[in-house]
Length: 455
Figure (cartoon, rainbow, N blue to C red):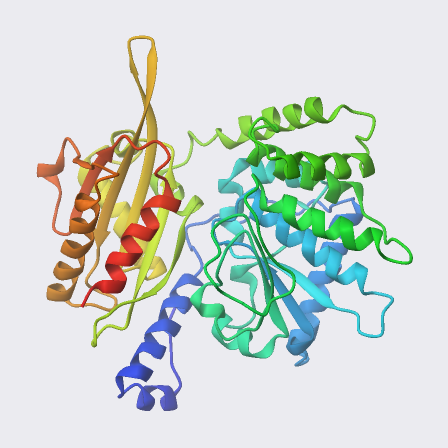
């Protein structure tokens, strides 16, 4: 696939500012290159639920309006690019609410959920597949709009649409920075984006879907006449809250209150809340763990979150940084490669990051070891820096050393070199650490700060 830029863009790229614009465009175009190794999908089985029918028709209308130049009428509700059940459900829920709560007003809202995950990556989270199947959605996810189905580059589309709503994420990805931020719902740290967004909700709950569902129910109950809430959507909401709160065992009081309100409107209204949420967590949690058959490439991309990060370098204003979260040790992953050797893991990793145009990739692995009768949680950090996208060899060496130093100097991590560190190649490093809660939310700010300060 050739990536061709207009002649005017090539001319403008002679300045450093426009050169970075072109780099950003290439980065996003690379992400949309289809995976030619994927086999043809099986025949589509039509979803039978009301929610599936609405979602498919909504997708159809969005594509019709885009083709006829009416993108400006649409609001895109988008979660994070990891595409977990919480992010997906929150986006679908709010898009449904926006449309139905305004359908009898002088200015009805056109809204669609955009899943920022490629279609062929959705099933890499088996819990999503189970939850969507239970909600009677179409097989193959043809009633959902995914990032690889967008008919226009996000940077261009962002200038045309009415705006975006962000759920389960504090800031929009850089490629959507041209779009107005209309609303934000997140259960993480407020990073200051969209100060004029309404509603703008940041609250520490187990599931972002809790915040979206609460706002939906509050507004629904305030309407002169309530619109229809399909039981399939309500059950999807309960599933998302359940899996993020471990069947309400890790729930806040708000998670519990909202789940009860949703349950009372669902077909499960006669069930006890705790029992139903435990059952959902058991079903979805079992599916979530069913990933032993995934290869290294799929493990890297199933929970990939990345974006362009600004630097302090005058020559390289931004680099692409991506994180994957993998529930296997690096040793276990090596056994999943074709040659079952260390070099092959890094070959697979390099092929994946080349496809998505990443300069820096960080694999965050977690697993358990058994010492006697006690299990111990162990985490790993695997760092790779490339030199073939935006930065040359010297700059890549400097960037790698900057990040490596930041990780090793962080006293809370107390990172120790991986046991086979002497076998690693150029700009490759791996560590282990025992900080149990130090997943992406902890590691990402450390690395982003190092990248931002890099000159």
